[in-house]
Length: 219
Length: 98
Image 1 (cartoon, chains in turn brown, yellow):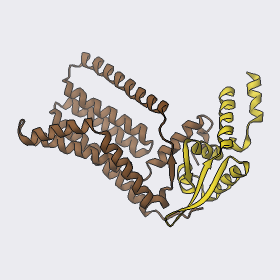
Image 2 (cartoon, chains in turn yellow, orange; image 1 turned 60 degrees about the horizontal axis):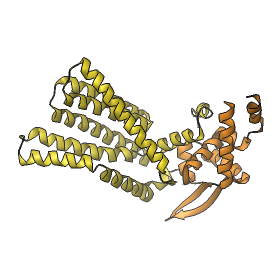
Image 3 (tube, one colour; image 1 turned 135 degrees about the vertical axis):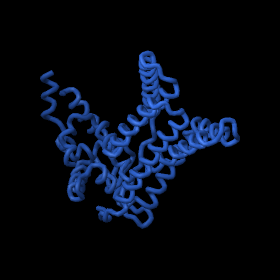
Image 4 (cartoon, chains in turn brown, cyan; image 1 turned 135 degrees about the horizontal axis):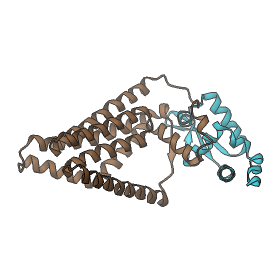
């Protein structure tokens, strides 16, 4: 409780709950490992487009797979969430405990969609303003946008030091790649590859630290 | 405004304690959680959490059920209807006064 007491009366009970739940949720590193699987798949598919000649069957298959994954991202996302829940209940319950979350209400869902749409509009406006002053190809703007938004999301969603570091690095690499003049596919391979590896390493360290910690007795 | 500030004097002291407020806020946001999860999320020690949960249970704000999940013993905690009601009132008083 140290460090959190002073904030307790500055926040609404809902904000307190969300902050505490997010911290507990990301403690075992499983979310990062799951994110790493998706990101490294993207990096691999973009990488195939870098090494194979445009128009070749491999190139076409990998670009189709990227497109399909973007459209159907919700399937691996929910699939991995289901798997995480099962792993936690089967193997980690003694370490992370048990919680039954409330189903997402329509109002909350609407708010989340609203925030996402608002963020997309702001990002597009910022990209437009930036592009009018510094003429950059759209692909470079996409790289920077991916890096900045990915980094921001990681920091907001994780609320732990390793997420802040990863988020900052992701944003910086996205911007650097945008100005490097690298091809879009190579840029995406490096960006997603980096974030994926970072997530995999930090998630694995968090998980192994948790597993090595001595079991705490229940009540 | 002064009347609203005066309402603070009658605030529920059981829920106003920072550690118990954390527990109640957390339980209000979920259906149920076990002792271990609450300990991880709040960062309270085992003895501290146990004492606070007992006080909340005595007040009728939290219901505690001991059960098993496979071989693992679970102490499941839920916020009662009274707990939800008291938290709602607490939220209103604090928001009006600050």
